[in-house]
Length: 153
Image 1: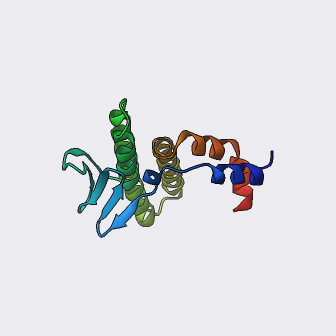
Image 2: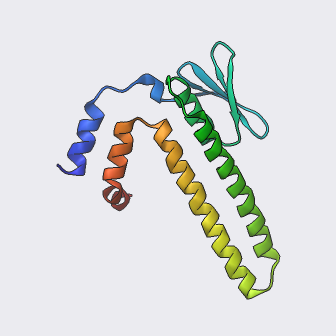
């Protein structure tokens, strides 16, 4: 079965409307949960006003809202990935600033490597958070067809 047939089959299956977030002002509504954007963080709340948690990154907040409706949730892992993303973003910013100001060629190469390393760690964490956000069948489709999807882009 080629990728086109798989995609058509996937699109014909019924979709849960809670999969699609709705933006209203500075809020993002996902089913019974809302994500409120603050100055430097995102607050995840239930519609009953119960606070689920606060994250530093939007992708982590969406994963937290999606995971909150499950009985066995992995909040600790989502918060851990959120902290890693935040730390790597901060480190990357520091490395970029250092790269602009340094004149030593060896130091430049080291900083470029550190920037690439931070970017790959951020990407890895985002892929793990995608596993909480998207249904298993979408993740399986993306994983199984990664090469073909990359070719069509």
